[in-house]
Length: 134
Image (cartoon, rainbow, N blue to C red; front, top):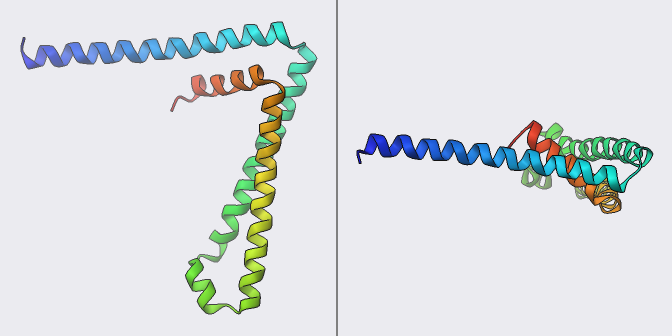
């Protein structure tokens, strides 16, 4: 068999594998939708989705709050320690720690919500992989 033919066969197999993976993800999502409808009332699902959206936004805002704090300055941590007074360095460390704690608390709240309704959480994650695959 020529290398060109082999290459075409391998490309076809690769395409088939990708298609099957996509179908598997879609079937998983549909199964989770069915399970969620059997397990949770419409009101429970609605409340979960609202809480999920709120906590997801809070997590993103908290993450951004942490990363933006040091980006605003633009200096490396070594430069800050070398140039700033000890009091100012301690202040920056306290502020950074407080922002990181708030971010961790937001993620902990989302994790707790996921634990309260694992099927709904899995469904949301599966849907996001279908809508925007990695």
